[in-house]
Length: 269
Image 1 (cartoon, rainbow, N blue to C red):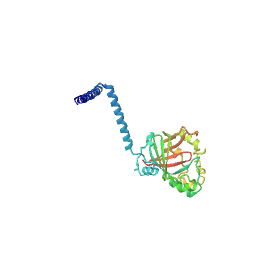
Image 2 (cartoon, rainbow, N blue to C red):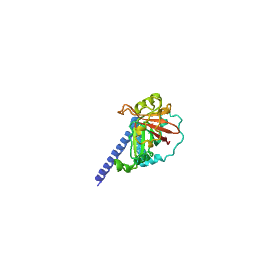
Image 3 (cartoon, rainbow, N blue to C red):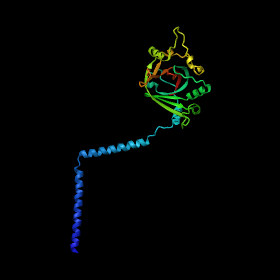
Image 4 (cartoon, one colour):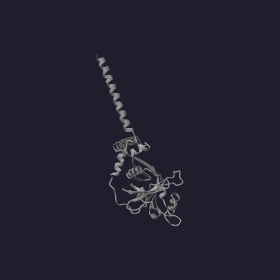
C-alpha cells in the first residue's frame, strides 16, 4: 500500500511538472512574439472589422425600388422648381427632369398615324413621359397604353406594370447654336427657307397629322445663339453621330430635335 501511494504521488508530480512546463512555454512564446507578429495580428483584425462594417452597411442600405410604377410616382410627385439658371453653359446645368408637353413639327422620319382616336390617345400617354438627364445618361419614364398594345402589337399586354423605364448612355455636350450647327441640321432635316427667302413647307411631312403639331412654322434659325445640348453617340451607325439636340428656349422650356420631330418639353426641377 505504501508503494502504491508513492507511485501515485510520482504520477501527480510528473503531471504538475509537464503542465508547468507547458504554461512556461506558452508564456515564453507570447513574450517572444515580436512587433511583426503583433502588426500582422492587428492588420487581420482591422480587415475583419472592415469586412463586418461593409456587410453591415450593405444590409442597412435601402435598395432602389425595382417597381417602375413606384419609381415613376416618386419622380412625378417630387416638388417642382420654377427658377433655373438663365444661361445653361455647362453639361451639369442641363441635369434634371423634363416632362413632355406637345409635338411642334415633324422631321424627316416622322411616321403619320391616320387613326385620329389612336393618335389622340398616343399623345395623351406621351404627356405623362418624364425624361431625366444625369452624367452621360438619359433615363426616360414612359406610361404604357396596354389597351392599345393589345389591339396593335400585344407587346406590353402581359407587362405587370403601367410604366416602363429606358436608360440610354450617351455623351452629353453643352454648346451654343451657331450657323455651322444650323447648317448641319439643315443637311439632315431639310432647308428651313426657300431660295426666295420664304418659309419652307414642312406640312407635307405630317401627311394629314398637321392638327397634332403646335407650330408647323418652327424654325431653328430663330434660336441662334441659344444654349444647346447635344446627345452624341460615337457608336451610332449613321453618319450623324448626334442623336438628339435640346434647345433652351425660356422659363425652363426646351425643344427636342431628333430625326422624327421637334417636340416641346418643360423642365420640372
